[in-house]
Image 1 (cartoon, rainbow, N blue to C red):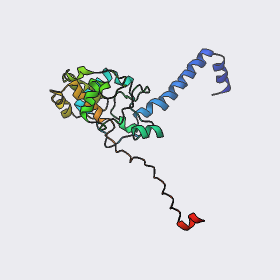
Image 2 (image 1 turned 180 degrees about the vertical axis):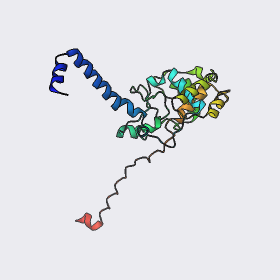
Image 3 (image 1 turned 90 degrees about the vertical axis):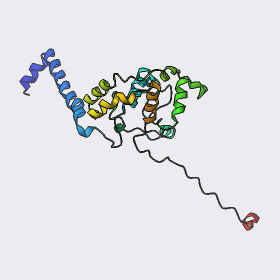
Image 4 (image 1 turned 180 degrees about the horizontal axis):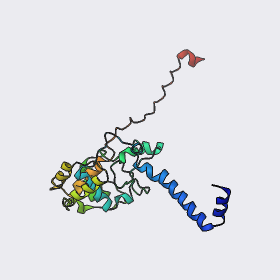
Length: 225
């Protein structure tokens, strides 16, 4: 840009603002939006799969009941969190989560590694009456989940919407989804969802601290000295 052009821009504040906004817009598109569509930016883990129809129903109930307002689903790479919850979360674990449920507020514990930690019966009782499991729990009870049927009527539309967003459901899986919810309750779906959290990746071995070898006992002669 010549000196004459620079002078013209500097003398016209409105033109300068427009040009500045144009530069910011171009920079935002290049640095923020284009990477969203680059395959190299999507970290994939081979063992991570889309949720089954029952797990997806449980996830939607989890969101409906506001569980994500009190529970996070991401273990940060901090020593105290790893020791308490297990392996820290990887971005590829959430490849099929729409939306993400990472959260930042922990009224209750993080649930990213809750799958398989307790039997199904524990979760059922905990959802019906949390204080029968944890005496001082401030979690509300959700007894109606046990009597309300899972929503088989809308599961097809929900899975098709996710398919449109890139979740690799096959047409056969979507067609079979209503049958998978037939006879299931919302409690069944919630437990299925909780039990799959954190189970799709290989877990690192638990860190152990080796105890130092005991010092040899002093000999009788040494004791005399």
